[in-house]
Amino acid sequence: MDKNHEVFDDYVMKFDFGEDKIKYKYNHSYRVMNECKKLAESLDFDEEGVFLSMIIGLFHDIGRFKQWSEFKTFSDKDSADHAEMSCDVLFKEGLIDSLEIPDNSEEVISKAIYNHNKISYDDSDYDEAEVIFCKIIRDADKLDILRNFLDVVMSNKSEGNISEKVRKDFFDNKLISKEDVMSKNDKVVLILSLVFDLNFEYSKKVVIEEGIIKRIFESFDKDIFKEYIDEVNRFLKESV
Ligand SMILES: [Fe+2]
Image (cartoon, rainbow, N blue to C red):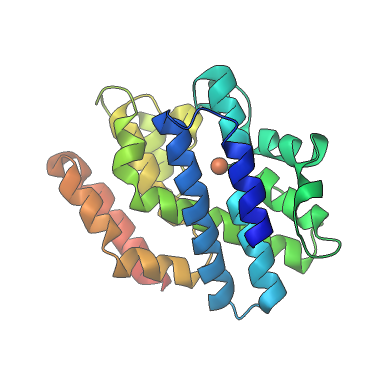
């Protein structure tokens, strides 16, 4: 991965590293890369598969740096789809040509990165490898967001009520759409709902073993969130 780290670092250093948001996404990218590696290993991937999962992890958010520089927001709805921006940087601007990647892996890299932030996506005509790499990056990204929920939530709006739509989707055990988030409390519910979309038992076990849900519960209003926390715990217990 040395060459790929170098390409990633050189690319990011073109942006203002003095900005906390840039630094956060830089560190997020490396953390997600490491989580992809662990996930791939938990699935008994060979060396090349682990390597590929790390490339997808490191570059999945490469469009974020441009997004922040151009729009000063990470809100896709107020700017542009950051997964699409990541694909543009890699495949239209040609950053991929500087990377060391397994032969014929452009397609899977592109599909996994493009779909990583979608609320849902159609993988019915994807091959087996494409399906699984899409799932790995989605889980790895969500695990990092769940671990760093305080950073994610604090950047959001005032407290406010939990919206009807957010509440309903949550108790249907659906991933909450960012578009429906109107308040900070909605955002907390969104963070909790990430658990419903985890694909692998490994990921659910990480959430349980690291006590992530308990930490979220301790950080926010217990009267408001108790029923939500109970629901996530019930879901986790039933699915591992
Ligand atoms: Fe992302």
